[in-house]
Length: 171
Length: 457
Image 1 (spheres, rainbow over the protein chains, first blue to last red):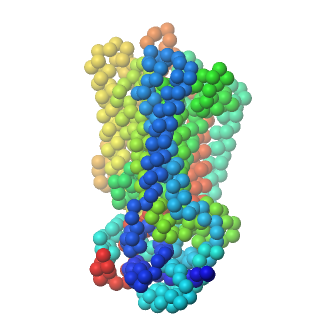
Image 2: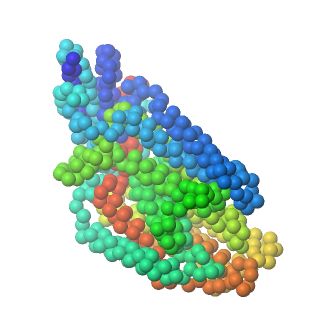
């Protein structure tokens, strides 16, 4: 099963969005789009919903918060010393540390979540890629069996791409 | 929303016509260093030599080479530490807080501001290590049980500070790195040879696919939402290093907001100080317009008013409290041994920024540059006033004393500016100093059909 792919580079945003929508209408799945910046019209055309990154942020932040409380309280009980007349476990004085741990864990797990979800780092060299995608072009990539590829090519060509490249998907 | 709407930021950068113009203009900065860059870099490298040399001399000879002596145990090092942490703050303000508020003028300055944050926290983080003298014991700052199974005292503001500053450095470095990934990928796609390899590694194979952008923009929002309270907490915690003790002049509830406002004030001034030459040298006039500087100047003016109000309320409350010691402390600030430091602070932070009320001054880039230098100086002296004048004149007359910064201390303090400049100059050569992808977000997208596309949605 070697699926073949076509990559179209577009100069205009509306052509890109139209190409994606027409491909979807024709029943193609796994459409991949490229853009030089986060473009919500493309996301909208592809039908994106909420990103699960937020789950990573929440779980990370809550873990950090709990760890901060546990750490400061446990170490205070581990060798109880009265400092400044405060109770051994004096929560107000621990809040700054709990807060910093919440933010630290939340931020780091957000990044880990992003890397997992967007498959980064991705060191495999791309088979088909247009270096202009990071400059000013938009792109649409579709993968299909040899039979349906022609149909996809026709749809993509209708939107006047700058270039069409063919190539197998990720090697 | 219509695809065809060209309102979004079309007026922000009227001279930027096409999306790939941004790549052309920003990436050319990194291409070939001019003579001016090398000259500045040489000066900074020499300054870093002075910085390290002076520090090594202090390590070799002992902390006695500094002017620190009872009763003034905190001097230029802590002053400079607080100064650099403060500088860092406006970078996060611009990159995170203004991002959440969707301020339309932040895109072109935010990368430089964020780099400034990372390098400023890095610089600040060195100062406690210099200050403690025996730097080889610096690992004592890390919370671990010592040989008697004692943990650090988590009720102490100094331990909070360790957590706050290390968290701030980690999160701002991660935030900065994440933002550069798509731009480094843009640099990779134009580069050749060794640079291409370098950018391929640090861009992690970014291609700008829909999936990557989708998660990236969401992760960025969450990081901004976490960085926003973080930046407010960090300088509050730094202020509690002072405010939690009962030294007259330190023990005030106003300290946290006062420090945060001061931090943003000094940081915005530093952003102006850095972006004015950046714009001039690299020809970024189309990206950093007068409108951007006007917005920064207004932020500067606003925070200057908060800071000046805080000064006045400190003096007023010292008088109004009727507390003899507190009154003496503040009288001593204005007319005592260190009167010149206090008056420098008041003039630079309170009076000089009054000029920013005038539109002509806000629209004059040389004037803004000069004012920003005044603010930088004034904010350094603010911390000097807080640290030194409070300590040298506490409760007991027999414990009063005079602190004179030594040559070593001044060399390390001055050297830290070169150290910061060294990293900032390297940054302008190695990473895109203007956020390429964020600028494209505010440019009107290229459309084939000028009007009709809006029907698609």
